[in-house]
Length: 404
Ligand code: SAH
Image 1 (tube, rainbow, N blue to C red):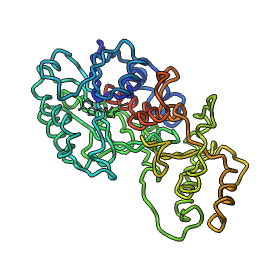
Image 2: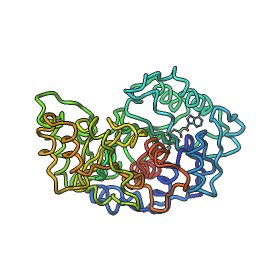
Image 3: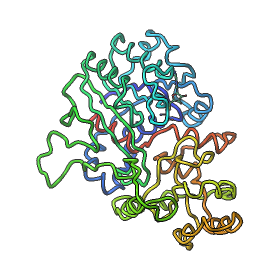
């Protein structure tokens, strides 16, 4: 195949670029994941040469990090809606990779959808697409769960139909690939001319990879159709609290996840740096939020989604790690409410709870070893941009699926 010209919109720190590299240059993580290896290695073999001809983002910090890692990629530090049709035409691209802002579609956001000003640039792209002198052959979009029920998604599908694309929607989490981190996201891959995907598309949103059209034998499944693990369903259960504000059902769900041997253990992704004390949870945070934190151990096979407030806000932004594993978690929490603050703190400190480092989160998200931050970027900024980014392994697989 010729060199593909790729346009990376909303490029952030370059998650899409790394995913593309992963699929183009045989960065074959799939081989190391037993779950995915069976189904995806045939795709990995069909390597594709691709080049990011332009990345576009307005965020100064993200752009600095992008430039630091992709020194040779043209990065346009401007708004997408500030680019004209001619600007886009000049780039002469074959593929769009994009992650439009997701706040208009999140459950905790106001769900402004198409009326949210942050959706404006995306609607602008949809307006431009049919007017380009050459419609790109491939389009891949990532967004949050919630996008699939939005008016923005309907507008996207209408535009793709109008421009004669085949497309497939997915809800996919890294846990499907054996990675111990939940990050359930919406993805869409589109290709033209219609009908040239290697798998049968479906109007349903797929939760796992489809089988290639050519696969006949059912005992050699091309793709495991794993359904999201319960951690991804984000359902809260009711019932009496056992400990740490958790019900028997929630505890059971976590235990189930930890017993899934197809998912790797967190310890494989951990990497302590020189100054680990800065990641320990401060006493004030422990006293205030201990009952609300999702606590995992190095041997766990799960962690909740790391979002941009991680390390700053505690509730619902990502798991924290119990680094002293000799202490029994349940015994610490069992009678905690009965203790004075001072004794409570003494108990909680025994667990040595700490935040995952940015590098550890980057590892879980599939960023390669050579991905680094410029020195002056603070830890808080690192968490922020990582929280906005994506799981590279998941997108890499989808790019391969889109192009095979
Ligand atoms: N996939 C990216 C993150 C996408 S988050 C990564 O791997 O890091 C959405 C990004 O869109 C943010 O970096 C934000 O700065 C950028 N953005 C939001 N509105 C924009 C606009 N109108 N024009 C250009 N970039 C925009």
